[in-house]
Figure 1 (cartoon, rainbow over the protein chains, first blue to last red):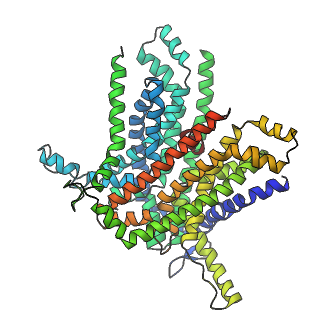
Figure 2 (cartoon, chains in turn red, purple; figure 1 turned 90 degrees about the horizontal axis):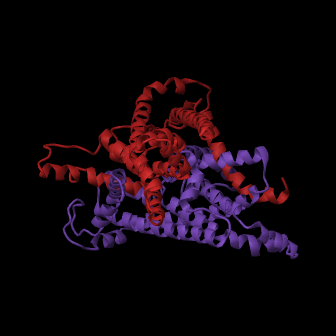
Figure 3 (cartoon, helix red, strand yellow; figure 1 turned 45 degrees about the horizontal axis):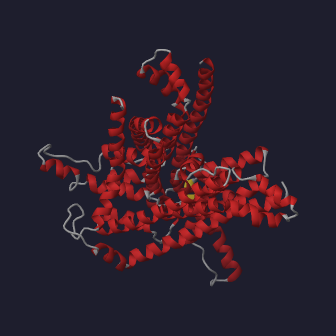
Length: 283
Length: 293
């Protein structure tokens, strides 16, 4: 590396070392430490924090369960939308419609979540439905349903976009070939469109799932602090009870889960791209 | 003549767009409500904007948020642009290492960054403060969590965004102009200032504005490293927890308008630059995509 290159890279390198690498290493070291009597960290080498992890298993289960549900419904809702944008929208409308999907993603996450607090509170949708006589009693806010809805709503842009991109890149000649060979619309969809957009589906789901592993705001605001995610447990451990070594162990467990998801993602995409190449070459 | 599936998909897409925008529209609508209750429209008024503007806590949080956003966006634009330029000349395992760091910084959940930087700064200051005391006596400054730590933590994420956007523009840049400039005996410095930088400028500005938006909207990272300070999102979060007040609607509306204005500027800059130049710098969406995959 030449001197100018080194100098240009120096500030970024410093930032990555001091604010990404070093902090993550410290979290790893802390997770083997002991809790100081006044809170914070006392040097030690013990597996005690890790052996205590089962006491906080509920947030992990909540996170995995509701994140899976949210991702599943996200795919169900996003796919037809992405399919519409890629195959049915006219060229002129398309760019505007795609931009309209992206725009909410770049507005404040906090405000988008807050919007649902009002809508689902007892003065919102429940009040309207009760006045219409459709239900006698309805609680939406502070339920698992509210959390899943919040997840689907907030992550819909991130889910839709990769699926849209994969559908957009799909070679339209394959669809015509399938039609010419006598397949009906459903057959074409199941045998050509869906397999060839699988990479987008996987990318969207994995992105959403990984970000959900660290979710804090949605359960805090829409779950009313009753349903804890790992993120809420971490805030509690670091900012309230100040049990840093145990918090670090929880954070390490979270990092480990994310590492598994990313590896799974890389393995799946490698397999998918291989299969796609095969499928296309067969045709 | 569109078939049934197409018609169904059109209605479906329409519903999804309503689903996406209805909650946001409701917040904006209620910000102009004159009543106290945030779920019933009682009349149009700017009352809550006025009350918000006179609230010293809101103003303090707003001031902090603006200061943090401008400083971290400036830092990340400079650092990120320099790094993107340098990374052109880095290859092999070192390049993979940097790519890895950039993508980790972007994809890692904010809460992990928040925790890690919190621990880091507390440890670092715990080690540095006694040394400062020993060196300069009791009057030495005591370093603590505050606005600078938020800026440092935001810059980690935002400079990575800037690197990705500027690098995409470098990849789409017209190299023949640089070669022409060199052939015409311009010094490397002159070529940089007169040829390279003007071509990169739209991407740099776009990166700056995205960094500004991100930093201004961030809650979770600031929540961990803010110490005793508040930012606007921290203020909004704690007000929601205390019970919804109509002031939040007014703050939310202003925040939304500012973010949207930045976003449209970014989109305009990136599409215009890609139309002018032969290369394609990509739109916000595709850059965002590239950065997250």
